[in-house]
Amino acid sequence: MTKQKAFRFHFFLVVFALTILLAQLVVIPRTAATYAKAYPEVAYLAPPTVTALVIALIGFEVALLAAWRLVAIAVAGKASTLQSRQWARIMTVSLILMAAIFAGVFFYMGSIAGVGGPAMLFGLLVSLALILMTFSIRHRVTGWLKTADTLHRAN
Image (tube, rainbow, N blue to C red; front, top):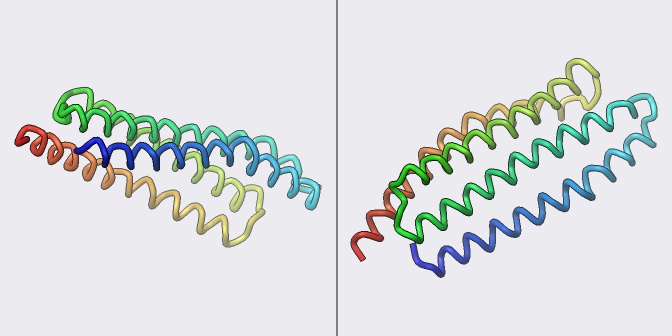
């Protein structure tokens, strides 16, 4: 992988991280407060839901950090090392935990608390699909690392 491609990857990872940070600190708390005012009968759900969503997004940030490290390892030409497999594993586990937390929130809201309607079922299904997709993502990342290592050795 060239340094120019790595710069592009790093740039988009920073954009994703800043967007998630904005969501954690501003968007989610304000949205929860707005809905708590509009629907006082379920306002008690706001604090645990905000907490769960912020923790889930921390998992996504860990996955972004792992992706950052994987790109740096690919640039260094050490993609077939134990370190790259560990970072791929960290990325996989953090994405699965994030999706599981989202699935738990959607399940609780839709089934137990009885709020949200069909959107909660859709969110649950998307979260479960993300868990399955994470394994495919890991497979692709490890394949990409092997290709990057082969190209780096050829140069």
